[in-house]
Amino acid sequence: MDFPVFHLDFFGNRWLIATIAILHVLVNHGLAVGMMPLVAAMEWYGQKKQDPRWDRLAYKILFFCFLITTTIGALTGVGIWLSVSLVNPYSIASLIRVFFWAWFTEWLVFITEVCLILAYTLTWKKWSNQGPEKKKQHIRLGFALAFFSWVTMAIIVAILGFMMDPGNWLTDHSFWTGVMNPLYIPQLAFRTPLAAAMAGIIALFLILFFTKRQDGFRHEALRAVALWTLAFAPFVLAAGWWYYTSVPDAMKDNLGVSLATLAFADWQTKFLQIAVVTVVTILLVVQFAISRPNLLPKVALVVPFFAILWMTGHFERVREFIRKPYVIGQYMYANGMRVDDYALLQRDGVLTYATYSNPLTEAEKAGLPERLSEPERTARLETIQKGKDVFMDTCSRCHTGHGVNSITSHLQRMFGDKPWTPELTAGYIEGMHYAQPYMPPFPGSKAELQLLGAYLEHLQHNKAPIPGAQSAGVIVHDENAGRIATKTNQTEAAAR
Amino acid sequence: MKTLGQWLSEKSYRSTVVNLVMLTGVLAMSQSSELFMAVGGGAIAIASFYFLLRAIALTARTKRFVNPYQLSLTWIPGLLAIVLAMTGLYLVISAEPFSMGYCLGVILFACELAMLTIAGVDLDDSASKSSRIIEVV
Image 1 (cartoon, each protein chain N blue to C red):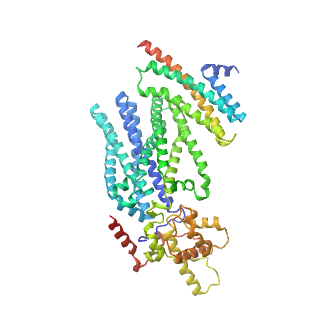
Image 2 (cartoon, each protein chain N blue to C red):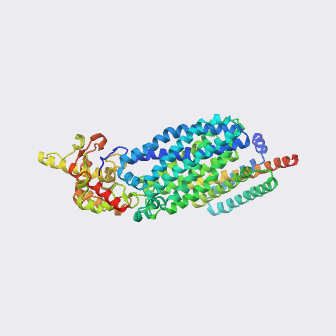
Image 3 (cartoon, each protein chain N blue to C red):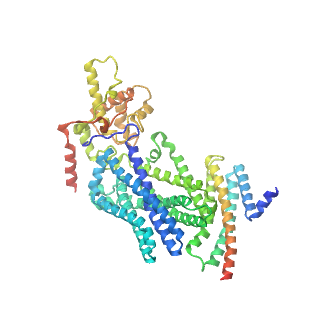
């Protein structure tokens, strides 16, 4: 609790990360990791067949990828760092402590990748006109770019796998044990062909824009790229199954909820049906592109294009959710508190170690019972203020007050319009992690549970948005600042 | 009627495909998964046999002249159609009649059976073309 709490009360913090991260994954997998080897392969094939049409098509696709990856891709890459640092600085801090050298290496590889894509794109025409030897060098440059694109993904996937299941790292805390976590290789094996297949679908879509309808080459290109897509499909399925069976059973129990929201937990079956329809649709279009490319309309490719984007987005959402209640498996809960710190926090209370308080705005003070005397009103506001601080420190990483995934909507669903008394809500929150295993246990003391209950009771009558530190500011508690951080650093230093 | 007859006779597979679509319609309306399984499975088996026979023959005849890429273009449309037709059949027999899954299964089954037939006939055309090429060589 060493950082002010950033909070978005309408969309919620999770949506900020999810939107940026999913967009980044789509660009990274579809246009970089999967597309660069495809473009290099097209260039190689054109050189081998001495067919300049392949070369022209490959360059057009590359230029499109170059524009998107160096703008949206780069911005969302930085955006992930920005959003996770704002929303959950504790988890990213812990990950940096474990994976510092991995991220440093990834940064070097990324810089190399950026230089290579610049060189590959900008030298295409010049080197192509300088004879076959120079062209061969250019093709090698393309495959080198493809390799470095894959390496960046391979490093990041180690961290993503670690967040789901750190495996033996929990006991020995070594870097390589963290990297070689139980889900690393299965997830990498799944993402690699997925990226290639995704690139194939996107390339099929682009071919229809970059070639003319009457052009016989369009059919040839559609056939070849459809075959590329199809070639990776069995690997996606096989590695997907390997990945799924490697995920711990406790995480699979969260699957139904992760696919939509809590209200749609039974949506799992419907989602699986939609996923099957998506896969079949993709296969149908690929089949048509191979056997009857002349009859394939642009609109038919819109379906697999959006279907694969939808599938990948959902996959990332599921991956993010099923690791709950943890943000780093069995090490740190989604609220940013370490499992090992819980005993201390539950004894002393989270507010004891909170550096900042989140002041109530005038709008948030409305809705108090009428006929309160001034001392009663002051005392009530003080309780609500403390309850709000407990909410901000322990709940607001995932929940909003009145927006998406709001705590009030959950309470409304459970308790309806009857008064949300502190006894009622605190009683539920104290044992909620037994009923809903994706929820972390409440980290604070018994007294703080009552304070939180009083705040939730206030929220039943006050619909004002809850501002984060970025808009309402904070009050600093000097005497408490840095206490838990010092302890955490000492503990981790001793462990290392 | 004359136009329809002309259209059907333009391509050798058109009348077969129309028959297959009608057969699928009758099977779907029967609402019997056992009947669909037996007759639909039989139709897939016959169409697969027709395709595989021609694919093997064409591969054997042209193996010295084609590369793996061309070979895959021979095999993949039909093999994919077999897999998808079986998926359609599975959906039909595992879902309640006229449910969402059942209807999608019926459509997939009919389309893929047609694609499988066309893939087999395409290989006939390819075989005759390749024979001419081999004769010229």
